[in-house]
Length: 510
Image (tube, rainbow, N blue to C red):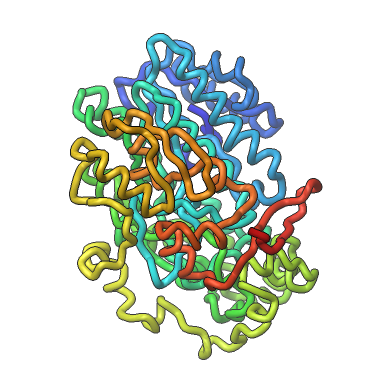
C-alpha cells in the first residue's frame, strides 16, 4: 500500500488487516519526520503482519522493494489541495511520477500483482446545474491551474496505457474524514467551492471498507469480471449535496451557517471539481460498501470534536471577523486574487474581473440548487430521473453495447464526436490499442476502452498544461457539451504557468 498515512489509506490498512486472508501488508511511508511516530505505532499495533518501507513513491528502487512478492498493490498516495496548490512540485512527484514509477515496478514483477489505482473525481472538472451527473466515460476536463487533477490525469492515463495483466481504476469522490473541519479552516481553498457545485460525499471509512471488500471477494474468486475497468467511488443519493449545503452542515457544528458567515460573492462560480455519479451503484452492487450517510457522518464528527460546539457560544460576528475574514485574505482565496489583480486566476474562476465584481452580495439575489431555484432539489439528486430525462451527456457511441460488443463502427463514431478519427484499419477488441488522430493532427495510440469508457482523448493537446479547452471545444462536441455549461463560446483563453510557476493567461492566436 501507498498512502497508508492518508485518510483513505489509514482506513484501508486497518480494515484490510481484519481479514484472515491477509497475511502481511507492506506500506510505504515518506521520510517526513511525522511518519517516524506513525511507523512505530503501526509496528506496535500489527507486529509481524506489517512491513514498513521509507522513501518516495517516485523512487524506482523504493517501488521495486515495495511490490516485490506482493499479491496486490494498492496505490492510494496523493498530494491533494491545498498542498498541491502550494507545492506543485510535490504534486508532480507523488501524483504523476510516483504513479509512473509504481506502475513500472508492478509491470516488471513476475508474476504481476493485481494493481488497484485510486484516481479522482477531479478529472471531470467543473460541473453545475446543467449537468449534475457524470459516469465513467464522461469528458475529462481538468480545471485550469488544478495541479492535483492535472497530475492525477497523467497517472491514470499511464495506468490504462501500461497494459497491466490485472488492474482496476477507482475514481474517488469528495471524501469526509474526521479532521476535515479543522483542515479546511486553514486555507482559502474553501472558497474555490462553487455554491452550486454538485458534491457526492463518501467517507474515508466506507472507502477503506471498499478496499477490504475487494480483497475479500477476490480471495474467494467471486469478482473476475471486476478487473480491467474504471469505476466511480460514490455514496449514492445519501451522499449528494451542493457546495452551499455542505458548508451549512459543517458550520452547524459551531452554531453557524453558510449565510451567517459569508456572502455569495466570496465563492468561485466555476473552475472547481465535483459531480454526482450516475453509476455510483456499480461498485455498490459488487461490494455493498455504502454504509455512511453524509448527515449522519457530520453529526458523528461533531460528537467527536466537542471543542467545535463551543463556537455556538461565540458571537457570529467574532468568528466571522477573526477566522473567516482572515481566510478570505489568504493567498489561495479568490477574493485575494481579485484584490491582487491576478487576471489569470480570476478569469478562470469567474469568467472575468467584471463578472466577479458583479456577483450579488445579498443571499436573496443568489440562485441556489439547494433552495429549489432550479427545480425540486431532492428529485434532482435521483440518478434514475436524470437518466430518464436525458440529463447525461452523450458519449459519442451506442452506450447500450457493452465493451465486448463494440465494433469499429462504434470506435469511429466516438472519434468523430471528439473531432478526430481512427487511423487503424482493423479492430481487435476493447483493450487492443488502435492508432488515432485528434483534430489538431496529433497521432497517438490508445485502447478503445481508454477513450470510450475512460473519457480520455489526445494525450498531447488534452493533457494540461496548457489548458486550451476554449479552443478545443470549438472542434470537439464531446468536450463542448460540458465546457460550455460554465464558459462562454466567445471565450478564447489559454491558461498556463510561466517558467516561475505563476498562473498566466493569453489569448489564443490559432
